[in-house]
Length: 307
Image 1 (cartoon, helix red, strand yellow):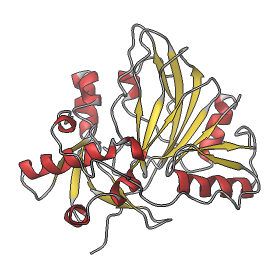
Image 2 (tube, helix red, strand yellow):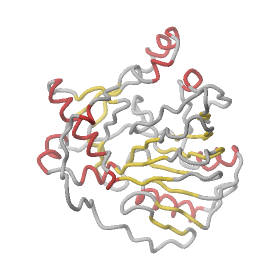
Image 3 (spheres, helix red, strand yellow):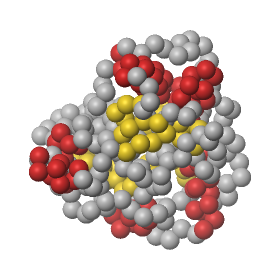
Image 4 (cartoon, helix red, strand yellow):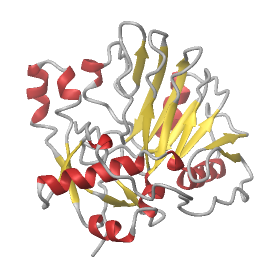
């Protein structure tokens, strides 16, 4: 994991307005309400319960809101694990994470990851990342449900990687548009696993390559698709240039202008497009207890900018 970049990278556009595009229009929704939380990312969705059957028009509107706002927040969703799974499965096949039985104790279902943090098992998800970029087909989306929250702290933040791309200097966008980076799990999840388990999984899960700039098929939007947790280096440039580029991109993605922050309550659900945003779980609540359940949807192979 490359963890020193953020302290060495120069600021991009250090002062003044940093606006990617005008806010989205929230009209045109009939089945749900959409209330933006930040200018380009994050909206609270009302008028819907995620348990049980949802009619097709409601699903269409949720999909539209997800593409526009990248992460959606649903409050007061007192639903079961079966309901949680049922909603997530409407978006595609469910992932079965190969590592969490080793690094997150207490897993009971292969398609539900339980993050149970307390005095003995501390939170370690406090870095900016997209999920599962070490796979050839990273997660399409994730549905995260709050089961137990600390009295204060434990917020989750998301960063809009499309807005981050849009506000890069033009020469830097041109420089990275056709680059490819290597992603791997060996230096993150691999560190928390027995050596024999690492060896057994390694042949099935080699390092993979993804475009530095990913294009979202439904919208044509370009987004930055590198993250400090799993991106190892950029190919076909020198190690020095790779480190310099990644450092600048990581620092730019982490700017507050591209972020939204969720203060959890029990029965809150966050649903995000893993292609278009990164997330960060604030680990500021130790030794209090925080329990979350996440179900992720299998994605497709990322596509880059065509020449």
